[in-house]
Length: 436
Ligand code: PHE
Image 1 (spheres, rainbow, N blue to C red):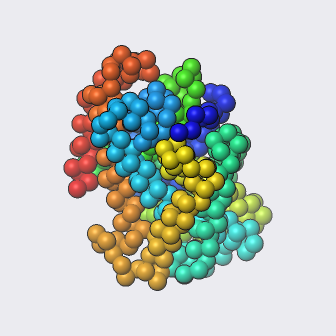
Image 2: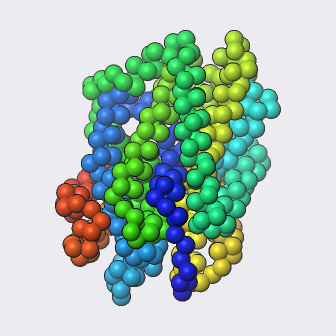
Image 3: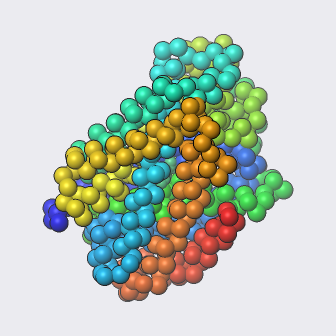
């Protein structure tokens, strides 16, 4: 077993790494369209509430396991609950995170394609349908998926310090800088006010019970909960560093980024006369159209913003994908003593193959359906609606009921301990049943 475990250098880089895992497609791609589908500001309030009340404690539960054990997923469970079946919870989260990585990489690949398009050709006003024809073509998305996963593998294989920590230390501040520029541009568009109002004026009549579970689901996904990423990164947090302050700051950055992304996207959507409930295609399909429309009056600025926007998505996606990669890599390195580069290569091949099926499921393989969805949609649904919630549930039960209370209280206050013990598992079970 490897003894010279790496750690994050200090509190700042640890928070940047955790924020890197949290801030991703969930914030820029998923958040705006889920807000759009659920009626705007009222939904945002529920999302913020469930983040503070539920996601922070669940983050603390997962983090406590990694931080105390100073070991990742599988091994952490073996250390804290030797000779029990809890180690299979580690196994489950490794599988979940690798499945998410596989389809996430496909969307990450799309961002590479759109970056290239915005840089080389720009978008045209009559470009409707381009997104559909791009994702259903066999080769281009596949090449982009391969490139995306290759970049992630490169970062992860460099190690915790020289790869993950270094990447996030620079990319996170850059992401905030970029999204603020894009937001300012969006605010300046004619008709932007309607989009801003949509984000800040709640209309509670639009809320349904499914919006509440959607808000919790979004919050879990956005904070990378239930899949071992937070656990693994917390295991690289030095013993003397505070988990709770890391949790507050990471959650704060993640929520802020989601709101900034919402304020960057919605005003543009309204200015472009598009309905906010356009679904998953919102940022890939609608935004290029808006950029093209604006391009007629401000060709240079809108082209520049388009490039910056897709760069932002790309960096956000890489920083999250490497945390999923690391869950599997740390397992192979720690448990099986496999060299990091080899471990990365093995997982690259497996996840690339599964991602390839996902990528092709929009085109050549679209006749294969599981639960009425294509392969991509089915894996997304199975992981984000069920496996993540299931993993989070088991983590809260482990920390609330199995670990020694005095150990847990070294990482958090009794308030959070009680939420982890009672409220969080109950809420997750409710989400679970609603999703079924
Ligand atoms: N939190 C990431 C996002 O918002 C997604 C993610 C899910 C990352 C699960 C790691 C694990 O995009």
